[in-house]
Image 1 (spheres, rainbow, N blue to C red):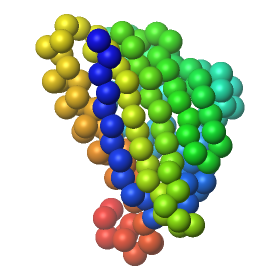
Image 2: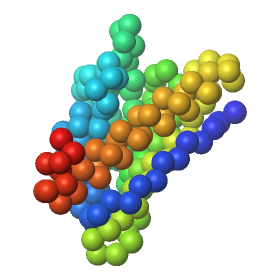
Image 3: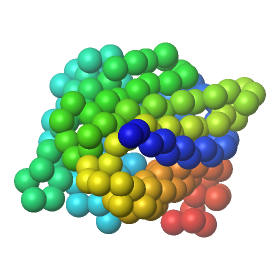
Length: 152
């Protein structure tokens, strides 16, 4: 049975700006929490283009292979696991305009845990921690310079 995880945050920048920030080659490394022992192994295709494939090396020689499957420039992109630790993983990144200089960042993940139902508690806890980090990094990237200096 699939489960859904969702994280929302307000970002003080336009939806288009935040989308473009995610399109940068450095975005995935910047958004990877320092406690996650993963490295970007390869990217085939243009950043955030439909069909682009990403391979991430995980502990114990595991690899997570994902493909971008949907794109609405400035509004959303979706990646789906091709092969990896989950039975199912569909991650939609949405950028909802809230005015010219403000948007809602929404990460929605539909997943099936890799093990029996008992692992769902652990998966949700890890997702919460990871997306809290990712949203904080994104908020800091668009914070006024004085706020960025204080938080570092």
